[in-house]
Image (cartoon, rainbow, N blue to C red; front, side, top):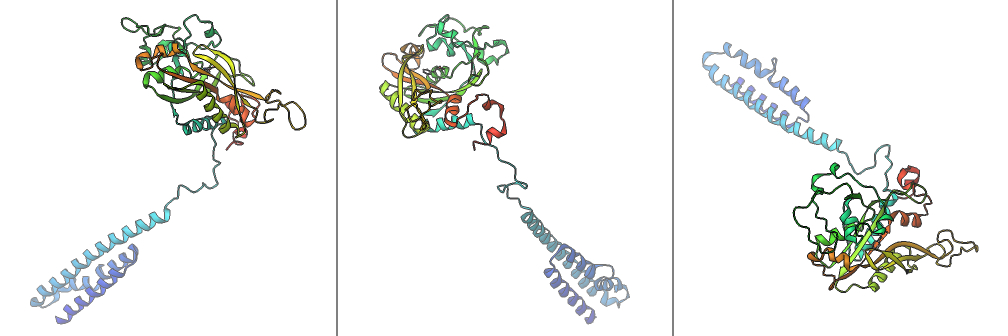
Length: 384
Ligand code: PHE
């Protein structure tokens, strides 16, 4: 009997060592068969217990069963260790670096030149302390015209005739509008839902001047990029959809000189350090005085002539390129937002509006506006 006990102990320690050293689930399975399978020695011992002397059966049975249970537990523990290991190694091996280029490499897209130009403009003004705001493209006549000092029937409305939108098709939220037609006018009673002539696709980004001032007290320094609409033809230099960046700076001390300095800085940042800007008298109903702003031509340097003596076609030989309209905010406009902290007698500011499409065409030498909208990858791919 001592022999059998020793055999059991021996088998048990052999098996324990083998299990601890097993390096895979498959190797573990082999060990299970070898030490606990039908033909294993321990199994044979357990089976043979009945043939032992009666006083040996108890102690041998106990020892053999204890060994069996201990080995089963050990196998189980080692199996979970190995499985966890295997999983981890598998995951590590299959790990994908999502930052690597694809195979085959997928061509990377590029922003449309208009977006890129818009971001350049935003960057320049952010550097000057402005914030970027956006506003609705489907706009109320009130913001697009009336509060910008185009009273109903004003001829300047005709210059920007646009697309009217049936208000019934709009989100009901948009429909509750008080619509005073004079600065400071108080509208009695419940606001009426807008009628068929009260909603337009905005003809410029200027309506955001008024919305921004309603939303924020002075001082205010913002630029507003966005899409605009006018009933224009679609050809090399016109499009019924175009893009503007509006600028608005209001405080108690802003003057026309600040406008000049700001636009000079913009012209240099956008078109090169040698650029200058010049003001010409202009007219906009919502600025007084109003100016048209030109920058000195970045191709001929302002001479109007190319090195070979020919006329520069970009500036048409004038040495100047018109890039935007601007002026000092008309006190009548402040009148519409007086209740929001913009007292026309105490506050002043400037506003400007530039066409992104035009600036992108000038800066990148694009001769046909339609190229911006066609999304031809041969065009897009040139500007990364
Ligand atoms: N909104 C004007 C336009 O579209 C441009 C402008 C903006 C002029 C701000 C003056 C001040 O033509």
